[in-house]
Amino acid sequence: MHSQSPIIRRTSRQIHVGKVAVGGGAPISVQSMTNTDTLDVAATVGQIRQLEAAGADIVRVSVPDMDAAEAFGRIKREVEVPLVADIHFDYKIALRVAELGVDCLRINPGNIGKEERVRAVVSAARDNGIPIRIGVNAGSLEKDLQKKYGEPTPAALVESAMRHIDHLERLDFPDFKVSVKASNVFMAVAAYRDLARRIEQPLHLGITEAGGLRSGTVKSSIGLGMLLMDGIGDTIRVSLAADPVEEIKVGFDMLKSLRLRSKGINFIACPSCSRQNFDVIGTLNALEERLEDVMTPLDVSVIGCVVNGPGEAKQVDIGLTGGSPANLVYIDGKPASKLRNDHLVDDLERLIRDRVRKKQQAEQDLIARGH
Image 1: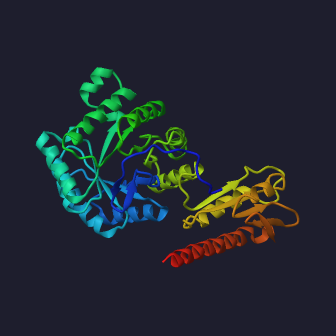
Image 2: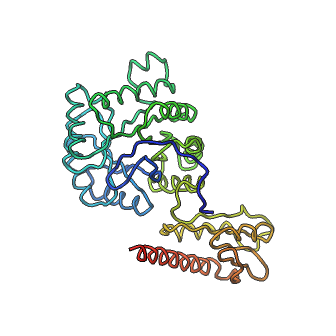
Image 3: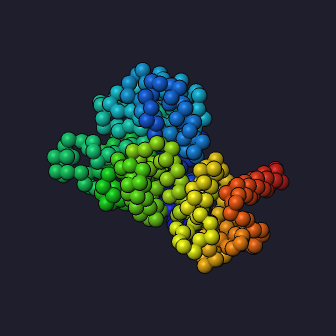
C-alpha cells in the first residue's frame, strides 16, 4: 500500500522554513495556525506543542503588534517546530521578529507600505536566511482590483499575487512561496492552476474559511485534492473552524490517501453491515484514538466479514477479518492468529504496536549499517 504515488509533482524552487524544506521535490509539508492569544505565551506554546505532537511540520502564529512580537520571541525559544509570523501593515514588526529568530515571514509586500519599507523587510529576510510567504486572500483584495473585477475572481487573485511577487523580484529576492486562497473551491483551484504556470516558487495550498470540521474537511479535500492530483502544491493548510490539531490530522489523511506522505497508520475499514462478526465502527474508533501517537507508516485493515476481509488483509501490514467463532489476523498478507471479540481492541492494539516497534528497529538497524 505504500507504493509510489502516480502523481507527477510540479517542479518548483526549494526554500527552507527552518529545518523544513519546501518545494524542489521535498515532501509536502502540513501546517496549521495557532488560535490562542499570542500574548499568552504559555497557552500558545502549549498549543504549538500539541500541533507538533500531531505531526505538524510548520506552525503559523499571528503577530499583530509589537507586544505580540516580543511574546513571539519567547514562544520561539520554547518550541522546536519552525514558526511563521503572520504580519500585516507594520513593517517594524517584521523587522523585530526577524531579529528574534522567525523561520518565515507571512506578508504581502503591497500592504507593507513605501518601497523603502519593503526593501528593509527583504533585507532583514535576506540577512537572516528567512523566506517570505506572499498570502493573497479573496476576502482582502486591493480596492483597485475589487473595482476592476467587480468581485473576487481567479484573475484578480493572480494579479494581486503577481504585484506582490514583482516587489520581491525587483529586489532580487527569490526565496518566497505564494498562496492564492479563496473559500470558493472553483476560484481557488483556477487561481492556483494559473499561478503554477507563471512562477517557479513553491505554492502554499489552502481553501480559506472552509467551514467547520465536517464541511470544511469535505470542501478542502475536494479543492486541495484537485490541485494535488495535478501535481500542484508544496505545503498545505486545511483551514477549519475547529481545534487546529484537526487541521493536521485531516491534512495528513489527505496526503496519505494520495500516497504523497506516509505518516502514521493508514486504516482500511468497511462501513459495516449485518454480516459483521464484530463491532467494526467501535473497534476502528477505539484504535484510531488509542494509536494517534504512532507516526510510523503502517497499513491496517479492519473488515467485518470474509467477503472482502481476506483480500484486503493480503495487501496490508496487519489485517483483521471477521469470522466465527474467532476473527482471523493476517500479518504481511498471511494468516497468523485468531482473536476473539472479548478483548479484540486490546489484542489488536498490542499486535500493531509490536509491529511498529519491529519496523522502527529495522529502520534503526538499516541506518546503523549505513554508517
